[in-house]
Length: 359
Image 1 (tube, one colour):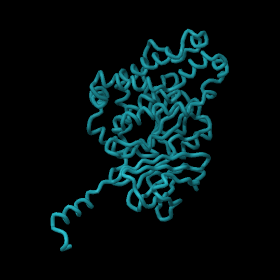
Image 2 (image 1 turned 60 degrees about the vertical axis):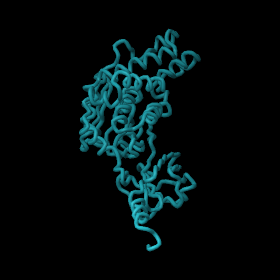
Image 3 (image 1 turned 180 degrees about the vertical axis):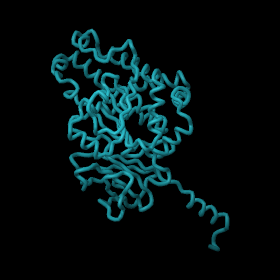
Image 4 (image 1 turned 45 degrees about the vertical axis):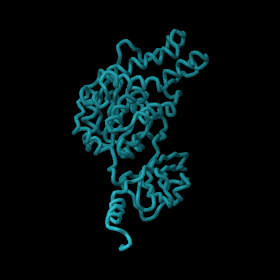
């Protein structure tokens, strides 16, 4: 110690005590129980990463790892032990830093577009919690008995249904759901939900669909502040979780609601757009169009129908840009129109974000 002057020693001690957690990003991919877990660290790290498995995202037994890998490998293939329930994985880097991951898109029998909000990263590098909030297509129209059993295994307590009054879950026998909140988001009266005849007659083409979706979803965003306020009231009550938000396809009204929720949590624009577009990988045309061959027998008709059933980057960017232009920022829109106060927003973050110090 005598070899170093006091200022140098003080600097070294402060540096060690104030060293920030590295930026760790992980994703989980599943193929019939075989998981590939990928990670990146910034700055790059050397050493080992231990992988632990649990069927609950908030409780891990870290005595015996499922697998161990070199951090520099960047990925590890593992086989889940809990084949009858959902698996979550906790990665511990050099016995010091940790992060949690899981499968975002959850396969169901008939229930399409069902996925977890977990694993997105906020502006202050906090991760959204796994197993708390989900989004989906309509549970009432498509969920099979097996799907409902899996939802029950996830512990789903609350559903926020954005469908129209005549389509909502209360019209069906859904005794397996403890709480159902129907928030029938208003749509543009000049827009029609489905243009089957116009599409078949080729009066409506792909570009018409994009324009209609831009107009309709911007209307949905700006004319349902009261319903979105109710949504955030539900989401800021921790006793309501786990929660599912849903609509017919789980891509439009649910996509708008998801964008507002992620924005409120401080998730950046790129991740919000990515979440919106993920619907394209998870919607099965055969489920939503019983006579799908009618629409796919002609190329032009098929192109238009595909556009109708898809989520588009042009649409979500239009909505986000329009809010920024009209209100100055998404934060201002949430505060002014949706009445999402700073206190409510912090409560939402407390529920849906892991603590920064350790997750």
